[in-house]
Image (cartoon, rainbow, N blue to C red; front, side, top):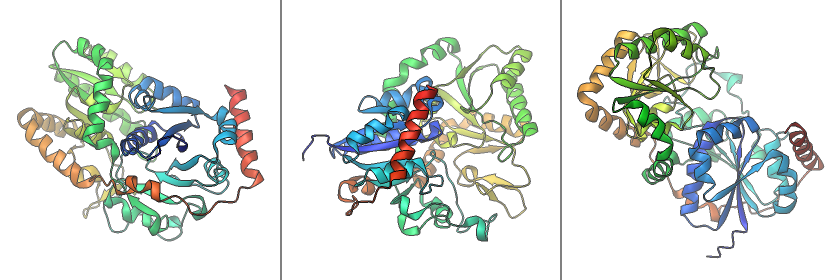
Length: 409
């Protein structure tokens, strides 16, 4: 095979670290196929890029085999490299012909565009969704702008078939959960854990993953109750050293205030990657989040602790009695708790049956995220056979975006 690295795979990070945590292991899997690609990641957001620097793991790992592009350099990059770009990746939230990502794709006239998952989350387990119907499920992605929609699991098929053309859906598993990737990630990032290991002083490490109140998924009152309960629980179980990993958009002031009031000293608030943190964990406590499966993949049993509000959400499962549970608990990927008593009971279960619980959760994880490498292997043979027609407005949109980014930096 010709390994001149003339072919470019361009990944776009739009608005979230979750995108980076999905995309980098996928690119690593492609690199292992030795298809002769050069890998480039473009950050739309300077803020997300800075968060990636603080998270260390994924950006540092990617820079071992790829390069990073800022939006201010996008116009010049495409002028030189547009004919070399053969595959573009963009997160799978709606894309329109007027989107910047679509403009990039149409300027790279030989490229195909793959939409990829926002994280390692699960989006559905039902044949049809129970909440939305009719116009709410209209096709929100412009069909002309993308070629494939990549999803993590077969469970997600029905969710996406009601949003995009079914023939464009490709199930690829979750590349972040492959053992060779996890081993590599932890080997290269274990030095970042020294501060936590020293602070723990031999105590068992309990990892707590939270998310901010946003109205849609979590009310402010419920958020404060969950945080308060967790602080109360860790205060009562002082044999643990507790590491809090908050969502990148979460304000830490409320949590810090409660910890200070409680006089609890054995804790650390970290920005490190969930997979790396969980390599230390005896158990994790998770709000509704894909950190549940991240934890299991890293060898740490997971407990879910969350309050599901009555208005529901299409990311949750509606039980026959009218209550809501997460897909994670429904698929037996975590121990479920909604009250302080239940949380204490689940922690006690882990105390006595940790390895058995972890084994069951990891077995279920493999069933849900069974990897599929056929798509990766076939990328080289799956390029678009015909060129696209670039519009002047595409170049104008890219140029304007680059200028604005330069002026704001």
